[in-house]
Length: 138
Image (tube, rainbow, N blue to C red):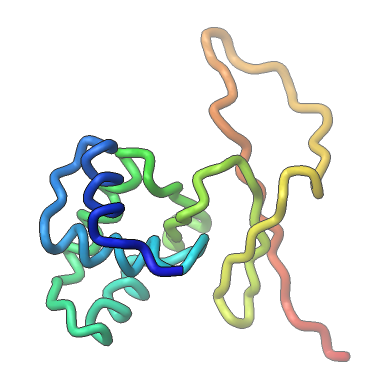
């Protein structure tokens, strides 16, 4: 699934972002292959492999700008692992310990019951569930 430059330009503009050369190049990598999960480091490596000269700092900045604009969802856990998800719908994740991959779980596949009362003047924004998997000896 290839996304046209004009489509990416419009997507960025609708999100309130100026479609710079670097943003468009990173958006093409991010949104050109369907829903996926990337880290800043893996996106930087993909950009480098594709011959796109961007610094890791630019990749971090762009991912955070895309997240703030609602184009990406951040999935952070363990305080130091952060993925950016192109699927911004409400869903959950498996984390495969051995490979470091994040895999989507649909919301209809998990039932959540019994949340404690919320503190005053708060509401649930979303619920993040990450089920960690590791290979068995079999």
